[in-house]
Amino acid sequence: MSGKVIVIFVEGQTDEVFYKKICQHLKKNKKPKSKKLFIKNLKGIGNFEKKACAKIKNEISPKFPKSDLIIFCAYDTDVFSIPFQQKPPVNWKNLEKKLLCQGVSKIFHIKAKKMIEDWFLIDAEGICKSLKIKSQKPSGKNGYEKIKNLFKKANKVYQKGYNINQFVDNLDYDKILSNIKEEISELNKQL
Image 1: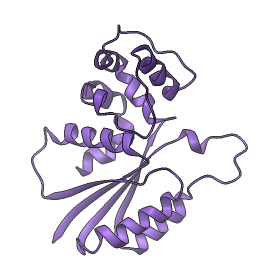
Image 2: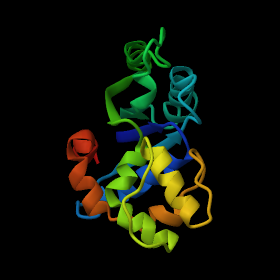
Image 3: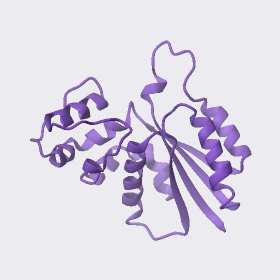
Image 4: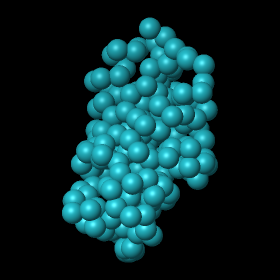
């Protein structure tokens, strides 16, 4: 089979669920194209390089040997801006080089400024609504803490990396996408 195959590598289950929704929303007003889309959860930023290369080599390339493979690496930037960090968790240049050697056509990055929770908070009202709490300005030192505090007010627990279906379905994607246009522009073009 030839054509385009788009693979989005994400850090965890939270991101996987969210990117599925984003892709559905981006594709809903477009003409259907014969492209395959895969969202692959790498279960953390650790070993991102090794896991991404293994997924391409063992899962994607064998099924689509004559396709244009377009890769998106989606990740939070907070882990890359830790002061005094000697070695970043992923060497992106190295990863790109390895993926290109495996026959990947293009590689793009989708960087959530700070963390994916900051994108969720663009529609804090939708989160509050799904938690059945009064709309409010979330408090906390970062996006994760803010969402965690909103969940706490609803007597629930938010745990990064775990299923977030309960509020992801209720988010206003028009609002979110209009605020992250730049970050997802290439994804929007490729879908």
